[in-house]
Amino acid sequence: MSSVDLIMPKLGESIMEATILKWHKQIGDKIAMDETVLDIATDKVDSEVPSTAAGILESILFKVDDVVPIGAIIARIKVVSSSENQPTNPSTSPEPKKEYEEVKIVEEIPFQPTASTNQVSSNGMRFYSPLVLNIAQSEGISMADLEKIPGSGQDGRVTKKDILAFVANPNKTVVTAVPIETPQVEIIKSNVEVSIKPAPEMAPMVYPGNVEIIEMDRMRKLIAKHMVDSKHTSPHVTSFAECDVTNLVLWREKVKKEFEKREGEKITFTPLFIEAIVKGLKKYPMLSSSLDGDKIIIKKDLNIGMATALPSGNLIVPVIKNADQLNLVGLTKQVNALANAARNNKLRPDDTTGGTFTLTNVGTFGSIMGTPIINQPQVAIMAVGAIKKRPMVIETPQGDTIGIRHMMYISLSYDHRIIDGGLGSTFLNTVSKELENFDSNRGF
Image (cartoon, rainbow, N blue to C red):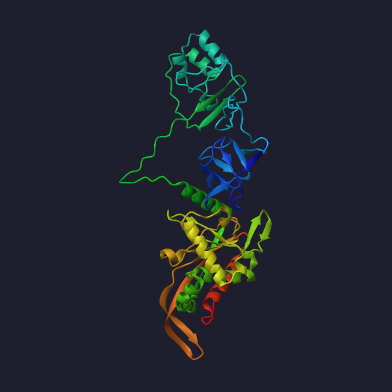
């Protein structure tokens, strides 16, 4: 009989930990190969962790809501051979199992004081050396009087000089020292004593006016951390371009009914945008890279992430793998499948990993432009705004005219550590020209 470790799976390059949402199995339960053992969550996706072996769940190392690092052992499965999988003697009662294996964290203090030297005042906030206490005892100074003596030592402690001055002039007016703010845990050390002084409790925050307080859900907390970490990691620069996408809009209107009838899928603008991005990345591969210290890792596999809204209002970024190897029909099917899986909470961990560049459509929500935050460890993200009809100047060989055109703003946020403004703007204009020069006579 042997045991197999169940490991927290790797869920993406930038994901270092996951939260346990639910255990589907308990200790002693039988588990089949690939059967779901628990549900986990990251800032990108909720997912199931299947069993890597058939057997009996021997131990659970983490509880619900624990945050577990990637690669950590989360459970152990006892693999039972056929010879061992026989009915046991009913008279033999199995030894009860612990529900969880707990890890105890012991905080160590460098020096442990003895009872005779660890003298604390009645309010638990002041400390005296044995010399000061001996002088106070020999001179008949009570603890109440001792507490009134202002100290000139470190952190306001009473020194030998202070207590001797008090003995020489006991009727002198005592000046109360102003309390000093202390950290949450303060360790005061000398040759003979160590004590821990807790900080005063913080008063609850008061919000004036008519307010409603809403606790952030788990995913929103994770997204917030991910966004702040990205801003701390990459110096963001955003460039903008304006696109005339009239040909693209008219072509989609012309073919969308036939496309749906033939392919069984609705064609949106997203696969058309991704197609243009892929062409730009092939010309400027630095935009599909990541940074490892002082090394630039250029990703040859063009995996395009697309920000997708969840029913809760949060965003998730499923990834279209090898987008450069798919035609428009293939891109459309991938986009629709991932979008539907996201809306129904059916995304797998692999669906959100491996992205090398991200597209977000802020126009879906009515915005004409946006300044997106880079999805780490990528180095660039593109936002497309709402398509609006506007009067524009049209240049022709016969002269300039004014016409109604379908216009759209696109923006590119990029990591200025490795992408300069010249390269970022050149890539952005390349994608813009691909969209503007869309062939309205093409097939699909």
